[in-house]
Image 1: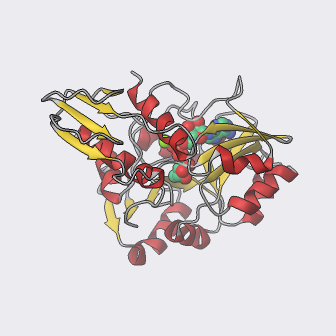
Image 2: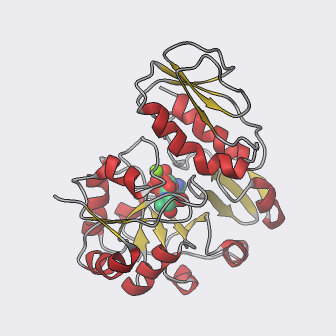
Image 3: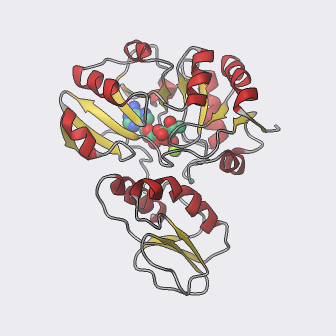
Length: 309
Ligand code: TXA
Ligand code: MG
């Protein structure tokens, strides 16, 4: 199959038509590029798993065209409603009790569904044109680095999908925060652009819950092919550095997350920098740790999964 990369002007109508026809399309969101398919059509969603080589045990996030759809797919508690009001459209995914309209393939047979509303103008234009929810994981092969540009999507899924809309680089560069909402307790299943500090105003913030399949549930995820370790920058000729603070003398290649030590910029650069280091023919990538608060937690969570083998 030939993968067409189009401009937004040319792509929005074709993307909506492909979704209606049960096909997959890659679209930019404010977090990372997603691979979308009609969420209420199991056969269409099956194509997502096929294109990504994704195990069926890993559930999909349902992206809504409008807030009105929320109550049609999930049971919405007052806390969940307040979170949606505050953070949607935006990089927050809520895990809520599902309604029957959501296919089992999307939830991996669980009794919850993950939902979000993207703020990206192109993503949102495609959903308006299509008019129904769209299931969309990150547009990468399973377990690999999420794409933050149209070129990354082609590198991951070229030849396997019909269309990518090129919306330029993604604003946040890391995936949405995922929160399981239970009464007034918020369990952060994946750290992301909406931080624990911001969520604390809406309920008691807790970590993972036993028995809930956590995002990128496996220890290894978001992983480059080159071995990656987190640690002090010890230079060597075949080693690359993903730098937070170090100047990086003596390394074969250095990528700086943010020269001004801005965690937002670091998050936006993270996956592109990992991809470039991965393509440089190195024996090892050393990633310097970043401070583990605010957005730094989300960055460290991804580095730890990228380091796990
Ligand atoms: O920013 C994002 O969230 C991007 C863009 C495209 O929206 N999407 C994304 O999807 O990162 P994905 O599939 O790569 O990661 C979503 C994670 C999965 O690892 C899955 O385990 C988890 O969300 N998930 C989905 N439904 C769930 C549920 N009902 N309960 C717990 N975890 C769930
Ligand atoms: Mg993913």
